[in-house]
Amino acid sequence: MKEKYVIDAGPLSLFFAGRKDVKEFFEEMYNDNAIIYMNEINLAEFIYNYISKVGKDTAIARHRFIRNSPINIVSPDENITEIAAILKSKYSFLSLADAYLIATAKKIGGRVITTDEDIEKTKEVEYIKISLDYK
Image (cartoon, rainbow, N blue to C red):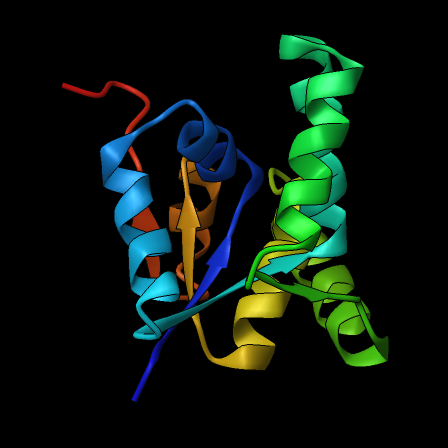
């Protein structure tokens, strides 16, 4: 059975920065051993953060790359939105984007790949925490 991952904006930025520990998940996907999902809200988060770091043209080019890759982009439906709203009301520290990230993982039965400690605090889903301090 293929691994299912739901990727957050942070690890996606690290992938484009060349981080080998994140690249491994994408290699799994390209080798047909895993499926990577990303929610539209988290994709928007990636784009606006990337614009502030490297500029609009590069961010839009990366966005097009993502859309043309095997990453499964998930549009929030009624169920995901309801789960995200409940999570956000339960955990005041959680951003709305992170609530959608967790809700997407719950719906597809996947593990979250994140740099965010707030995901861990909820104990709602399995996750893989990518350190920002890479050695």
